[in-house]
Length: 225
Image 1 (cartoon, rainbow, N blue to C red):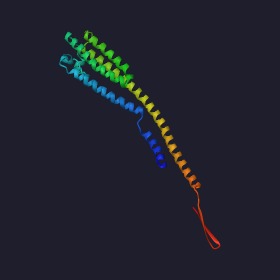
Image 2: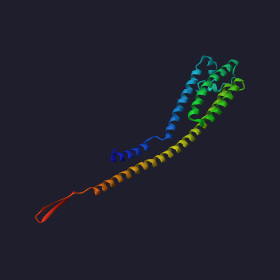
Image 3: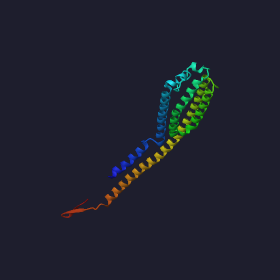
Image 4: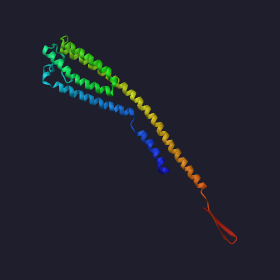
């Protein structure tokens, strides 16, 4: 590699270091992607279970796929029948598979959110226990489940804000470190070029010289090179 090429390589390296995304940026992008994937997978799982004919009897009381309840469903003060109670238990058992898959995904990319999720799951289970034991009407259950969902969403937004702030700090710290490295590369390139220029001057001064002289009568002419 030539002198000029080496200097250009150092400058190029400093540019590449500054252009690459930081680890924090990549982690945030990964969290967003995996979060969207987990949400989509959970919705698909719930929809598949909700479409089963054995749950049609309870589907009229509340949306089993997680979609918003209708005004009529919210106002429903009826209690479950024995047959509906069995269907609720079977549905909740199958829904546990969706929950388990979702929790595993969240634990992998956002473990800080798990306490809030587990708290919401326990609260929801308590509601359904009351429904099955005819201690709570369909409409009241829907309202309490909506309250649990809203509370969990608020906690999730706060957790997301804290995670984003933490990752942003890591991002800024890595950028600062990269700037130091890039500056070091740039300074090394400058020093390298200066050293090469000085060496070229020294080589020129130390280069052997030859003097040729020619005499013409009483005069002489000399040339040094």
